[in-house]
Amino acid sequence: MVIVMAPEATQEDVDAIVEVVSAAGGSAFVSRGVSRTIIGLVGDVAQFGALNLRGMRGVADVMRVTAPYKLVSRDNHPERSTVRVGGVPIGPGTVTLIAGPCAVESPQQTLEAAEMAKAAGATLLRGGAYKPRTSPYAFQGLGEEGLRILAGVREATGLPVVTEVVDAHDVELVASYADMLQIGTRNAQNFALLQAVGGIGKPVMLKRGMNATIEEWLMAAEYIAQRGNLDIVLCERGIRTFETATRNTLDVSAVPVAQRLSHLPVIVDPSHSGGRRDLVLPLTRAAIAAGADGVIIDVHPHPEQALCDGPQALVNGDLRELARVMRQLPPLLGKTAV
Ligand code: E4P
Ligand code: PEP
Picture 1 (cartoon, rainbow, N blue to C red):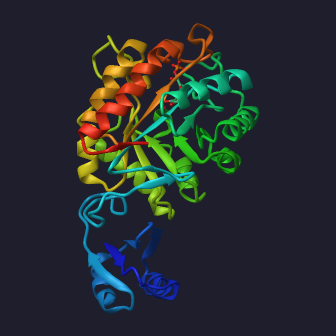
Picture 2: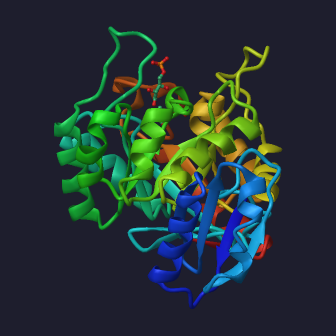
Picture 3: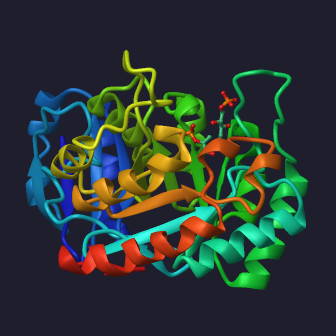
C-alpha cells in the first residue's frame, strides 16, 4: 500500500501516519521527492484498511499496489522525475552527457579525460576509484587517492563527479567526495549496499544487473527508495545473451519499458554494453533515439595504456562526432542536450 501526501502536508502529518502504521504492526517507509512525499507501507493490508488513513491530515491519496515495487513505480507517481546532480538535471526533456575515464589512474590522465569529456559537451564527470574487476589480479582502482583526484579535477573543470562504490563500508567515504554514487552491474543486487546508499542522501545511479530482468532492476531500485532516497537514476548497460560479438547486448527496449513502469530517469551506458569503441557512437544514437534521458561514456587520452577497458574508450578523434550527436539528435526529439 502507498500513501501519497498532499504538497502542503507537514512533518507532523507524516509522523502521525508512521505512528498509526507502526502501532498496527506495520512498517512505513517515507520517501521525499522534489514535489511530494510518498509513504510505502509494508504489513497486513487488511489491517491498514481499518485505520482510515485516507481521512488523516495531509493525505492526498491511498493506493493498493500489486507491483512488487511501489515507491519507484509510475502507478503512484505518474509524472516522470528529474534527478539533479550538482545542479545538472537528468530526466525528461533533457539528454545528459556523463563522460570520463573508466578508471582514475593518475591526476594527469583524469584531467585530460575530463577536458575531453567537457569538450564533447559533458556536464558530469565519470571515473572509477574503486573498480569491480573480474580478476583479482586486475587493477582494482586507486581507492581514496582516486577520490581525491576526482575532487581535484572537479575543482579544475567544474564538472560534478559520478563514481562507483563497491562496498557498503565505503559508502560514507565515497559520498563525501562524490556528487552521485554509482552502483555497478556486479553489485546491482547487493541489497546491503543498496540500503546503505539509500540512507546517504546523495543521488544514486543504479546500473542494471547484467543478468537482471527489468522487474528485478526496479526491485533493486526499490531497496534504495525504501531507505528514503528517491534521487535514483537507472542505467541500462547491456545484458548477458548468447551473442559473443559484443561484450554484452544493449537492451534498447529497456529504456521505454523502464520509463513506462517507473518514474525514475533512465540513461544508457553504450561503452560497457558493446565493449567496443566502434560501437559506442551507434549505440549512443540508438539510446537517445529510444528516449534515454542521458548517456554515460568512457573516454581516455591514451586508451592503449588504459588500466581498465581501453578498447571501449573514445579517443580525441571520436569526440567531434559525439559532440555533433549531442548537438543534433536531442532537438529532433524535442529535448535539450545538457
Ligand atoms: C569497468 O568499469 C569494470 O570494472 C570492468 O568492465 C570490469 O571488467 P573486467 O574486470 O572483466 O575487465
Ligand atoms: C563502470 O561504469 O565503471 C562499470 C564498472 O560498469 P558496469 O558496472 O556496467 O560494468
